[in-house]
Amino acid sequence: MSESAIAIEHDTEILMYDEPEPGEATPAKVHEKTTRSNWVVSGILAVGLIIVVFPFVWMLLGSFKTEGELRRVPPTVFPEAPTLENYEHLWSQLNIPQFAFNSAVVALAVTVGNLLFCSMAGYALAKLVFPGKRIILLVVLAMLMVPGTVTFVPLFVLTSNIGLVNTYGGLILPFLAGAFGVFLMRQFMENMPKELIEAARIDGANEFTIFFRIILPLAGPALATLALLTFLGNWNSFLWPLVIAQSEDMYTLPIALALYSTGQYASQYALLMAGAVVVIVPVLILFIFLQRFFVQVSATSGIK
Amino acid sequence: MSAGTALASATGESKRVRGRKSSAPGTGRERVAGWVFTSPFLILFLVFSALPVVASFAMSFTDMRSTDISTPFDVNFVGFRNYGHLLTDETVRQAALNTAAFVIVGVPVTLFLALLIAVGLNSGVRRMATFFRVGYYLPAITSIVAVAVVWKYLYAPDIGLINTALTKIGITGPNWLEDPNWALPSLIIMGIWRNLGSLAVIFLAGLQLVDRQLYEAASVDGAGFWIKFRHVTVPSMRPTLLFGAVITGIGYLQFFEEPFVMTQGGPLNRTLSVAYESYNQFGYGNYGYSAAIAYSLFIVIMILTVIQFKVLKPNT
Image (cartoon, rainbow over the protein chains, first blue to last red):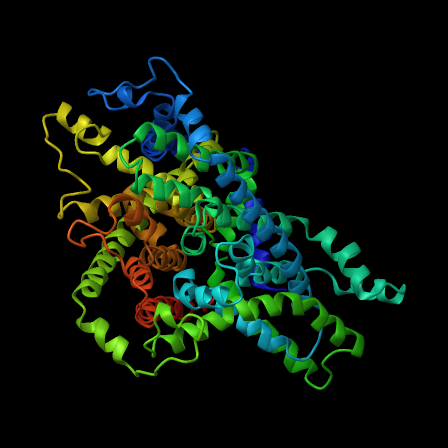
């Protein structure tokens, strides 16, 4: 069994520290001291939390203010007359639905591709014995740390030569099967009992049946993790869409926001706050629902 | 625990498996299935990930420009000329200095604050832990572009909240993003803010593995918070801290969206990063030179990664 997979299980358990731990009775003296310092710690944490969350709150409040109110000194905290005009403007004049659609199509397609291709390859690398396996594994591991900054120029040349610049294909195809996904799936599947597969083979199941009917259903947690991380990564992705989306109808949300905020709308803060909200909210909702799970995964895989 | 150790264990293990079964690499059926299952991934991966890494390296030794895009093999080999050029290029030098400053200042501060938060979260605020975790994690999962847009507004010299607040206490704040001396520090502060929470969560997982008896023993000996932090937490957490330093460093080395949105690399190139300059050279059509800049950055990243693997290998 691989160490990291053990670590994942282990941490999953210990990270659920919200519940009180029964075996943690301490002598009264120590406890008293702990309680007092807990208040101090909580205070510091709360101040830290306010600093960390504040820009988001400010953005949200600002998005409901008029440009005039936003520029007032001293600033108002809550919008005097909450307005949706910034959002209306985004919708009616800036093609935001198109950008949101592009973002969603790209992020979803890349996620589905990674789930399928990475789980298949991860399974083969974890459980099947075949020539060349070790080399594939080494290449995958070597590629884990390669950032997009390094590859975007040749990738652009390649994409251009197969005629995919400024298309969904160009936005999606390069990320459809990533090294990280294979690594994650392999680490997870490594721990599945080999007997399961052998028993199915004896029962006459073919390799595809074994994979789709037996392995995949058991890989739920790893698939969910991969789906979440891939979706987040691609929803927020910047450099590649910036390079490849050359006309407005192919922009994703971050590209549109970046180009508007540095271009003709640079000083329209109210509008930009609303734009930022639109980029963040889908991810925020996803995160709030899956946060515990997400945090565990990040803590154990070191993915930010 | 970390990706680093996981990698080490993954390769180490496959060696063992191979050693045991070296004479029989699977049944015929397994061999076929193995290749069938890996080939969709492999084709996409080789074409769109592995090939560009090699091509980027090759390209950095050519004079390729945007005009050569349809004939990528019909370019001239120029040896180390691109690399020689970037050593004397003032703009690249400034970008390298900025990037180095971002890493050298940003990493220790982020690590220190993240560890403090993690210790806080670990030392008993159980009831609120979920709440704190969501909050602290928020900046890391949101688009840098969206976050940068908000911070640009916070940093605005006349109407931004930061200067408005400073005025209240009698300080005239600088024009953060347009003052050559303040622009980069402004971006570093935002970078720290962004990475703090996610790193704290990674540290928290590490802290949970620290032997509680060490703390209890220290408490019995009368050690306060600071002594425990210095002599129990930090030494026990060394591998996790190093891992955190490396991934944070790798992230900071590539900073790009922040200056793109907030300063466009200005004023006076003071917020230009190496990744940004590589993107700019690509925009000017200098593909070979852009690749050379990107590859130089990649070499630094690889060195950091190797250090991490080397140091983290023994039992973590």
